[in-house]
Length: 90
Image (cartoon, rainbow, N blue to C red; front, side, top):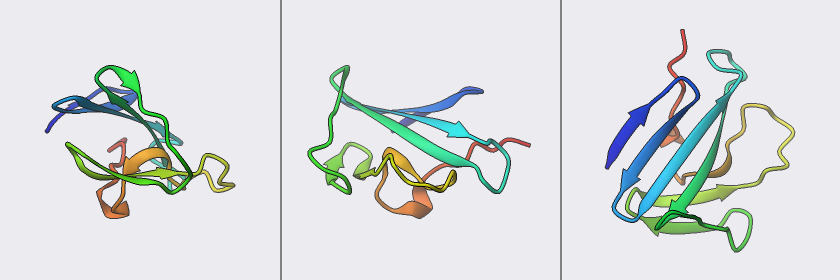
């Protein structure tokens, strides 16, 4: 798996899969992540909230978008919450 880092997001690539992770409230206790998953260059739509699929990154989970907490994960991100990246903002 390759990872690229920019000021606005992290991009992961593993075979036919791409994951774009965007951050809000970077560098604060309220920092949250939002993930967009692509397969063969097309957005991979979830079948349902909390769906878990196997990808080139390992298990990925679709976290609900309607969470009221800024820091809650949203969209496609790693199923294991401890693997969800932080922005590393100062």
